[in-house]
Length: 97
Image (cartoon, rainbow, N blue to C red):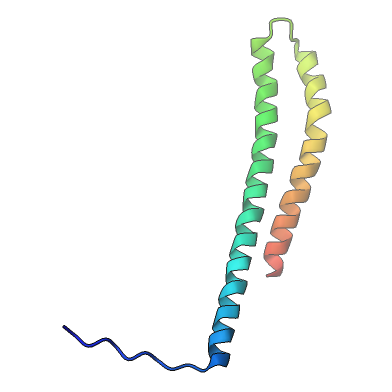
């Protein structure tokens, strides 16, 4: 068996600095992951609303194209606003770091 490599000696200040840095890195990674999840869910919900609107056109027999157009005019603007705000915040924060 090979002897264990010697353990490098570091001061308490260096150890505290390394632990603090790793905590900050962990928090930054978690924040980025959370922001990414929110962005994906928001864009996915927009896609889902649009797809369900078109599917309803084919599934409901009395559903006319004018109804689909009216439904999309009601649903799409607020969703686009939310998606724009979320993605703008996500990419704006990302570019600052």
